[in-house]
Image 1: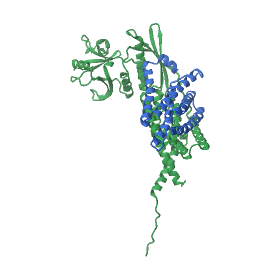
Image 2: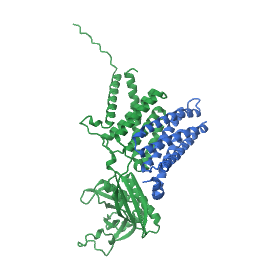
Image 3: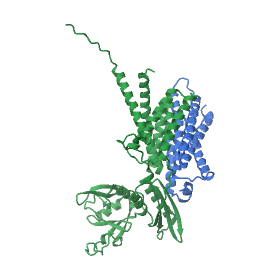
Image 4: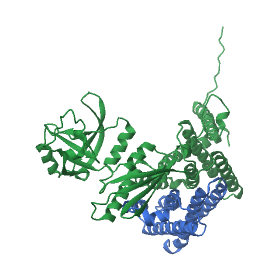
Length: 170
Length: 413
């Protein structure tokens, strides 16, 4: 059951609409929650960029796996965006949590968030890569691919967010 | 004689109870870890618990549906609607994997529907094979429905006139249990109209006290409209809850624009991302221990944070697996693997940034809730479990912190 083949040939309008609405709703609700909890446009922009990079990385990852590694795309691959968004939101959550707890402190500068975010991101990256690589030996090929694409997409997205934050969080 | 005074040393009850509680929590954690580990049920013969995998519940079939497009004006649009309704039905029952392919032989269109699921085969069969075209019909004047020599007359569509009312004329069809004429509970379908549905009101008024019919495909169920026109309740043929649920799905997934017939079906081999549960548990255990040891050695994270994170992870994962084992819940092992990996990463991040606990919990709970409502197949299963695991990991973090503080105080560390 190749997912790409399914989408192009067999998905009905209902299925395409509901899948798009689902991903869009996750994005919108997450972004709105982030904005209403921080009231900070800079963090909102960073979050949107983070989601965009993660989604693009997911698509590229699935495409590479399908075309270069010739691995068939199954229904289980639909979980990649969900796992990636969960990991991305956990990462952004640390940034937001730090911002909320410190924003009313004396002498608080938004640039200090970036420093804290760097420390959290490096720790999350090490942990995710260790966790991903150590569990790969025990998983089936499809599950391995899902874990690998999700973790790599998360790592790419969080580091892109960190790199872009240099220009936004100042 | 002077009675000697016995001096009682003041006992700090609070510390004593905290100490007892710490011992109890230690025992509980140990018990949960032992239950969650694979094959530990062999330690004692008094308990029979092992993780039940869903592997044996899966089945796969390919159905070939011949579409009747002879009356169709917009064939493509009608076929897309048939596909949408079939997908809606399968989504509602929770089928894990499905795919649809359109093919053409001469002028005849066929839909090849492949499913792979752990759901009840009879229920899925009925959801796929039944077009379930709903029409409200009235009796033809020239037919004798009370003729004892023609007992099937009330059930044949040819004996009825079609009315403009189809499933699309109603807002919702609600399946519920009501008392029947024998004073016993059985399932009925209650047709709910749109608030502006005056035509239906007029129809009920015009036919009050008379028998009309609800045609489901070619079969008619006679329904007597009460004189007060209070309720339009159609008896449901099934008495079992699972079939009543299937009928509710059939009624509420939309009206098929065209009919079809299931012309062929064949069983397929199941193809799931199966993992050896024992290897997986051992692997994850070894991985988590090694990662925490590595983090301890590189000394980048405070030991207290690592300890809290580690103990909370152990409590969360072992409680979850122990629950799955004790409740004998059939589990997809590859989904369990993804859940464990995700939760281990989340707990690690929350334990390191306790100030972010609230926002991370809120965001992840929202995402899980949306996925439960809008997701399908494996996503729904994963999201439902994840929501429970998020709550569990928050409780574990509280227990872990309380436990570590108490142990530290008790051991005067």
